[in-house]
Each structure stands twice: as C-alpha cells, then as structure tokens.
Length: 555
Image (cartoon, rainbow, N blue to C red; front, side, top):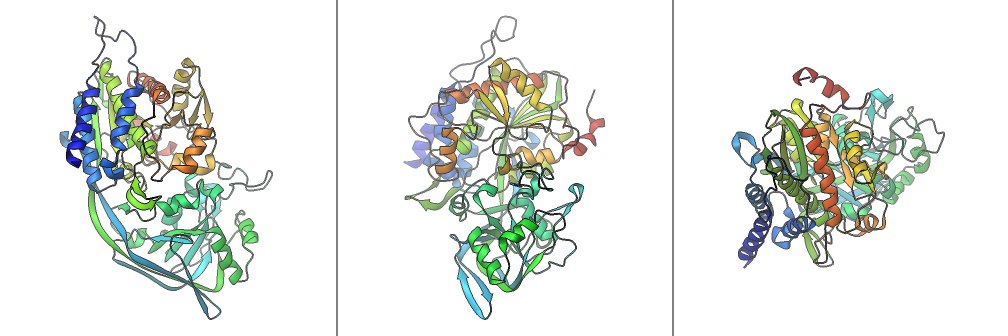
C-alpha cells in the first residue's frame, strides 16, 4: 500500500511538471517571461512533506524516496545531470552518530553529587566515531564567548591551558545586546551574529583548545530559538563530514546547557554569573575556573559511516558553459525523531520542502525560456539540518569550479499564503553587491529590500550558501515573503519550526511564493545572461578568498 501511494504521488507531480511546455515566439525568444505557478509549488510540497517520505531523514528510506523523486522531476523537466561524471547525484561521505541508551551527567561539589537530566537540562552528543563517551570529574571553566578572533582584537582564551576541561561558553557574540555606548558595541557587527556567535564555531574552537567537552549556555534571545527547538531534534542522528583526525577536530562531548542550570554551577563555585557575563564583554576577559566544581558525562552511541547525496541538475550555457549560476535548497528534514503530541515525523514542509519546490519550479522556468548564456545548476543539498554538511562536502569537492561560480542563490523556506509581502529580507545584507541585482528586480515588483530583522540569529551562517561563501562564492539569500516579524512568520517559528507540526495542509496555497520565485528567476536570469561577476563588499570576511581566484575569471 505504501509503495503504491508513493507511486501515485510521483506520477501525479511528474504529470504536473509536463502540463505546460515552453511558450516560445517564432523568433525562439519567449513571448513573455515565464511565470511560476503556485499550484505547481504546492503539489511539490505536498509530495515532499508527506508522511510517505518519513521526514526526509539523511541515510533513511526517506532519503532514497526523496532523491528518486527529485531526479524524476528534473528528468521530466528536460534537464541534464549536473553531478560528477554525468550523474544526477554527488555522493557525500559522512560520519553518523546516534544515541544508544541514556546519558549520565553529574556535577560534584563539596562532597556532594547531583544528576542533570539529558533533555530538559543538558543536551550532549559527540561527533567522534566511537561507541562510548566518558568524561570523568573534569574541571569546569567559563570561557566567555569562546572566541578567538585576532582580526577583531579578541581572544577569550589568553593562552590558558584548557586541555581536559569542560568549557561553558555564552551563545552569540560579545557585542550581542550590549548597551548603547558600551566599548564592545560594534566589535562583532552589533546584534548581527557573526560566525563566531554560532554554536558550530564554538564547538570547533573548543576542540582546537584541547577541551574535553563544551556546553553552550542557552538563552532564547541569543540563540534565536527556544530550548524546545533543540530538545525536540536532539534524538535525531548527528552527522559530520568524515575527518582525517576526529580526535583533534572534535571534542569528546558537545552540546547545550539551560541558562538557569548553568547559573547554579556558578553559584556552587561562589561566582556571580551575571558579573562574569559582563566581564566576558571585555577584550581583557580571561577564562575563569569554577573551582571545586567538576562534571562527569557518560553515554553510549552508535557510530558509523554513511553515504548521502546531493542532487544536481544542469542547463548548459549557450555562450559560456564553463561559468555557473547556482541555485540551491536543502532537501533534508529531521526524519523520525522525538514524538510530540503523538507525531514523530518531522515532515519539514516549510523548512524546506518549499525551497526544494522552488528549485524545481525555477528549473522549469529556465527550460521555458531560451538557453542561458552561462550554465545554471540546481542543487538540492543533503544534511543541512546536521550542520550544512552537503554543501560543506561540495565546497571541499566542487563539481563545477568555485572560481567560476558566479553566484549561489539560496532558498530556505517560503510561507504558504496569497498575500505578497512588500518587503524582502536580505540575509547578510551589505556583504556583497548581489543586493543590487535583487533590488532592481524587486523594485519592478513594487517591493523593497530590508536587512534581516533578527540578525542576532546569525541566519547568514546557518544555511547552505555559507560553506561556499567561505570559499569566496558570492551568496544571495533573499528571504522573499518571509519577513521574520510578521504574524505568520512569528507563528511558524514559535509553533512549527523544526517540529512535527511543520506539515503540509490541504488548505495551503503558494501564490505568494510563486511571486517570490519569479523574482529569484529574474535575478538569476540577469546574472546568467550577463558578463558581470558579483563581488564581496570591501572588508567582507569572504573577500580575500574571492580575490585570490581573480585571475581564473575572464574579464
């Protein structure tokens, strides 16, 4: 029964993709710009977010169904494979760890020991490819924001030996929420989170410091999401790219600790947590040991290596096929994980079946028009929810040279509805001149660009354009129609983001998203038919990487 239902879903959407072919004038040019269709977007989302796809978990039967579905749609649209050696997929080699039994987490002080509960109080996991993690009676050290940024004149570690210690670090950047006029204000882009504010950076830096474990102290404002978002997805498998020396590159245990639980540890050590947080805002801060307080962490896990897949489709350029305009959207969600209200399937309808639907619709629009001058590649990434690993793997193993990739246009979540937002949020506004390409076409739609209204969440560093941006590829992440501060956006983030309730509903319409797709199509078409090379803004953190490859791009 399950297979037959899936077959019907595949066939129904494949048929939809073939309903309208290219509309061409006699000259071979389109009589009008092709337009995205909300019904098509909705049909794609209905399939991808169905229970049949089991939450599109990496390395699950849901992955196979998702990959098969995407390949079938790109084939039906008439695209050619965009992967290595003429394949539709790029295989990404990943390490996977999964919880195996309970965790024992204890804190000892003054001859007494108390337990902390995994889930409500502390979340721990490991990226090391081992079956058991044990950290015994390790001293605890507060390391401020856990940042070493010499170009910003900041070092939270000051050469202190942190080997074998458990680090407690604050979420976000040192200047997040700093009072007006505070000396640290603006050091890390004010409330706009930098990469140093991301938990992924803090985990990596703790490993470079030789720590045994690291726990990020959670607070909702600094993290950009509540504890429930972390807890609900905590039982899902964890993934990492396969590393040459995981012992050196990953701590034994990593995770999060509730803010009030962390405050209790400081109190036990006779320290004033609030005062230390204030000190951590200063470049003079040095690590502070929680004298007399130790922590032990013990848990089992399964560890193995798996293969997952990026799906790539391509339309070769008619004039400059070796130059690439890229669109990307991640196909994965959280699969089957912690049940909530009796539902354990994390369908990921908005995040990010809608983005993948947009990718397919963009492919149709490009095929409906004349061949672009530059090649256009459509990538559906794996393992974004596990830490941008599909795009990280591609950045390390590019199929199409990064030096001649013109732009990477990212799509991560569109909201259903009919009301077109007059505002388009630019995630990472001002970092590159791709903003100007977007603004020109947005103005034609009667819309305006605004910077990210929640820059403290670090959205630019949390989606799949980022690994390629680190390598110098200019990124455009226009969250069209998803303003982050309107009622629909707030409701989604509060009640469905990364939860089983992020599900498709029969009352959905995607008319507003279709307008957003038209906008992104126009921008990508402009760039694909131009001889321009977008640039990073002078001083942007990725400028140097792009400049290093200037000689590999034609004038």
